[in-house]
Length: 74
Image (cartoon, rainbow, N blue to C red):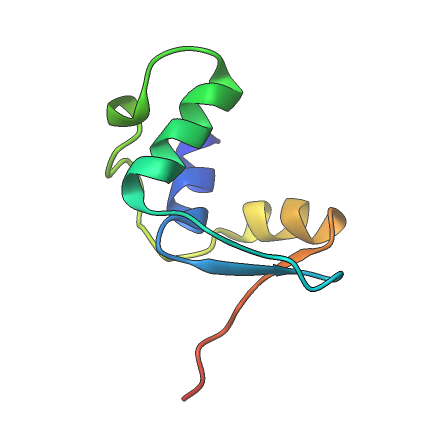
């Protein structure tokens, strides 16, 4: 699951219902996942999934917490 989260948050903008925003670089996303897992570092997750492609399972979990991906304007 960490890989799916990594890909879903890397180089992706997220917006919370309260107006807050969040985005993560490759390294920051890897650091976050390593912290959540409780071991390793960003390199353990670096390029481990399809960056910038939001996984459906991750999107549903994030939505339960009030977060949604920011869709780019066409």
